[in-house]
Image (tube, helix red, strand yellow):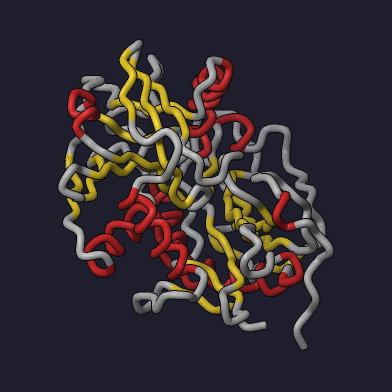
Length: 342
């Protein structure tokens, strides 16, 4: 029997935390993961010397559950989140949570919180946050011996308050990631490094920072929370290529959509700051934002302008097509949609 939805004004939700009924918990001890379970307890108790508190040994993922046009509840490519988290764990010397078990845990959390999945057409989604952290006591600089893997769910609205209204980026003096560092994995410490920069950007009236490569500061990398795409005058979709960029699942999906659904040429290559003014469109892409148009980039007094009022033509086609796939309005590529049995 289908459960009724929670009595929430879905259209007014922000991108924030709302406590839901269940979360998934699994513990790693003595070299193995336990069976895992659903819990109503949202509180965590760990040692004051836990690895996550002393040396930031933690990583996370982000994905969403949607209600499609036909009433199904689905997740978008959770297998890629499982793989990316496994890559993050290996880089941070954390035990890999089995990828198939990751996808099953996602299904359990969504099914247990099915009343919290926003209805089709509301503009809201159920955001899922899988994460792992070192839970045992550590004093010497070394990996923890015990870990906890968890997933919580929260209904959310748009990541940026204006929805798809074009945003303004600045090129900061701060660096996001070092060469041969951890910029390519979803480590919590990467985001801690960006907090001062984003607060500073907001205080100066910008929506986000557009980081450059820290080695030469001549090439575009990404923002604090999303990858970047550009559109050329001849409608080629270009994304920056770098070993310190997080491999966005949304970006990879958009590049496929551009090629296979829209017949556009795509290119992943180094993008230099000097060529920004040659592009006709720019947008941020990621799980939280999906696709957010950029109206302006400010680089130390130089203003690079795109359309400041509307989403660009190609950006909108990409956005509409990917959203249509996620919402069940457009036939998806094989394996992209995971239906949650209710």
